[in-house]
Image (cartoon, rainbow, N blue to C red; front, top):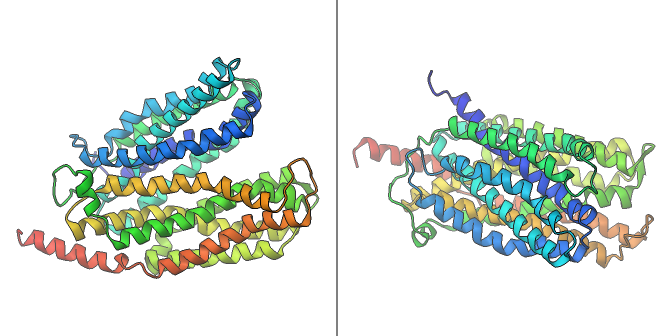
Length: 453
């Protein structure tokens, strides 16, 4: 049986499905595990999560270097799906286990929480840096890359959806959120699924596009591949991700303390409805990637989606507690954000290839690792930004009814910051030129190869 495009699309998507059976458990349930099960205070939790970004900066770049230096028979990237599978699942479980074993010793508990959190984060990097770096090697056809990214993002959404729906059920089944081991059992079940999906990813992908030069890339040589267009790309994506992440971090505060109730529903119901609407909207947006790319191209479609997201955020400025408008605003915001989350990886593959054709050096691992680190940094700063704004506004967590000033600053975080980031993203996208230059550069390279040069 031949190796079909569909087989590779499913294989590529399976890797991100696996990651999203593990990472959402960390992002959504690790803080409640620390505070409710281990009874750690907010200062300790803040130290564990924010200080870890320093280690992320090292491990992300280091993993990029390792990928570029790799020379396995089965490829530079895909072997790490197997190498990282079991450690990712194992440390996903241990992150929710080891601190519980020393709960009578607070300092040791914090130390183990810090270590295990960084180990699972590193294992995530071992899998996801190659996952981003592999795309230019899977296909040289930009349309096929768009389809591959669509499969990746949709299957990632399936993984996140499984955690969102089934994790609370499983945690309650194993003893509830205050039980010290309920989260570990739940993480174990998702970890088994993640290992299986990573093996599926390895078996169903092939790195068929070879680099211009086959030698292993050193860090100093890899940095030579960096050019102005790549720097512009990472700055643009960082600003976009900041707006995305701050909005995500402010959802609960917005509905619980700003809206409070709407359409006869309390804030708990509103948050649940918003979560479902957000997930469905993002999946719809991701499914439209090949369609809009074919009609408008990546740059113009990205600008269009940012404009739509801008309109959605403006709706939130005026909708108040009107439930239909809240749902419409949610869809209009998260539909384009879903599209742009996928487009980020498609554009990353293009700019990596652009850097290779410009410099003659394929440094996909190093270039992808910087993008990965900035994404993690954005999702580390989001909590700092939203809580900092609320502190300036005089937010009091002990009061259900916040002051007008506090509510205004919640609105600034949930709507104002995303609007500013979207406007900046639109402006920066207009300076992208690698999308126009890349096809011509690929034609010239193909002509050289045909001429035997």
